[in-house]
Figure 1: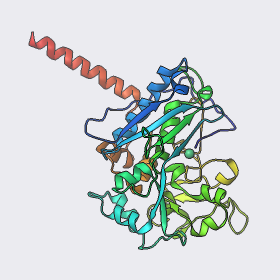
Figure 2 (figure 1 turned 90 degrees about the vertical axis):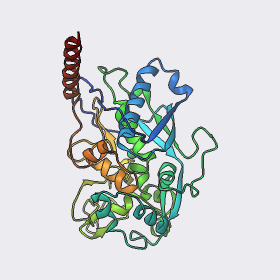
Figure 3 (figure 1 turned 30 degrees about the horizontal axis):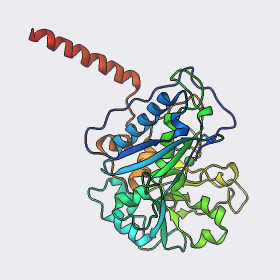
Length: 344
Ligand SMILES: [Zn+2]
């Protein structure tokens, strides 16, 4: 889920258009379903192109060749939210599935080393994962499909058109960025990667016995100290800072939104400190973001397999800027022109 930022900063005069290299191999295949609330907008074609651009970016980073259906609708009062088919699988099953993956990255190996044979977070025996992740790990029998056969074990994403920029140069939230955020959650990281939110709705006992989420396995408040609480403060009454770490809390990758209980954001989203990221619990208007290192590490250790492009971003390499791609495009066009000339 995405919250609007209470203090809206206008950071750039023009909204950037996402630049992505098209996938060439069989990758993740997210299939959008645009419902009538979406297609009836006068800006539907622009909004559809934004959704398709977000899908292209994510598909290009994920190598698992499965198809995920996602319904898109326009909903008043939200920036972005999703509901996704979810199921609780035994922790031992999830761990075995993670260990069984072929060609694990160094990130996977590091993360797996912190996962013991039984759930280390709470006394529960299950992990909640979304339908698409269950499918890619090889067993979606724990997930109940939606009655709508078009969606199945996929998800529904709602966005608020009234908040969105309706062209590359108009003001508003960048729909592509909003959709990237929600798609991450459909894939079981970000908001859907923590069951702390559900604990809020299902009562205090849920914390100690219920399913954890994928990101809860990498949620720390200090080196060696796992965190699984909705409290925004520590025992001393000071703000509690929790963070995403795959090496047992030694390295802070980014901070979680521990204030989620108070600000209405997702506990498994990022807190938004420092450089803006797609998975921040709230986004800034007039700002276009691409998936970054932390989102790719989260997807990787949660169970997805990254493409070479995804591995590059995971390693900290930046995505080529639009201008760079444009220059490369001009150069290759010139090269093509010269070759054609020499052939004559
Ligand atoms: Zn979220």
